[in-house]
Image (cartoon, rainbow, N blue to C red):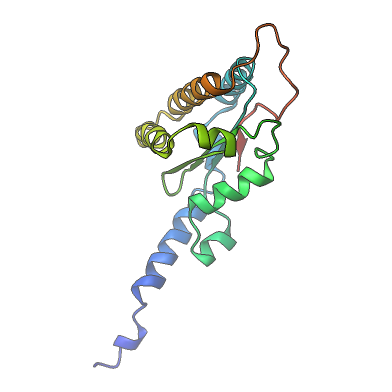
Length: 180
């Protein structure tokens, strides 16, 4: 053992530092990747979707995880679950809210469905939807991927929780995407 080997960082620490740098480097890039006009179009699509069913859909795009998540080694799933609660997606009358969450720094997509919708759809449904969205995310067509994911989630909600004909949509969560 030479005298310098003890100074080399452990692989776990190096990987954590690289991840930390990647997440801090992208901080604030969610708004650049999803400009205001795209946000408006997505909000309109969410509103149109919610007129067809009793569910609520939220879109959240985050550039990088907060430092506390990085330090503890938490992933996009943990963050999506926390945001599902913080954004009140769980607080729907029929337990049929859906969060579509994108973490740009890790190219990670998480779709969190509330209990009633999760019971109605096989788990593979959400994984396939996330894979489709991931292809768009890697191809830099973020709005297109979110639009497709929104359409697919909307179709599932409409199939399982269709709004009665002529029913006015219940007031719900904001339609605009959340950018963090």
